[in-house]
Figure 1 (cartoon, one colour):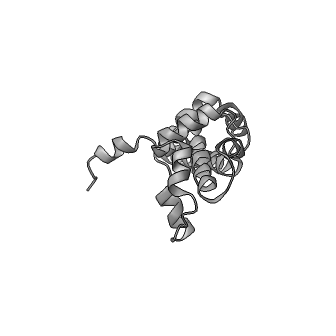
Figure 2 (cartoon, one colour; figure 1 turned 90 degrees about the vertical axis):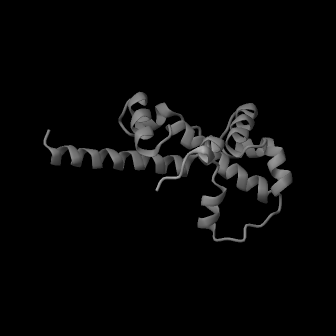
Length: 149
């Protein structure tokens, strides 16, 4: 394969992966799994996972859970839904898994997050708020990384 053909194929692959990521963003509350995402992209689940991680730095499942937790954070701040209702509203089927992932990404359990942030209005543009409040997996490890020049 020539370098132009390889580059063209790489761009096509990235377009497919962006469509998968966009689907996760749109349908995060639906019952999605890597196999369903892979079928929609005409790939095997393993290949999709490897390609997605290479392109975006995390697996499709991790990206999906980050989206769900991000939405849960907003619901916990701005609604009267119980933690259980929030869990199911964002597409999680297990309260235990939801609480574990929430704590892993946010650094505190959902109930504690709600107590600390309930009714706190975000006084910034929504696009900035999305970046600032986005949960970050392994936040402690990232804080220890040296800054890139």
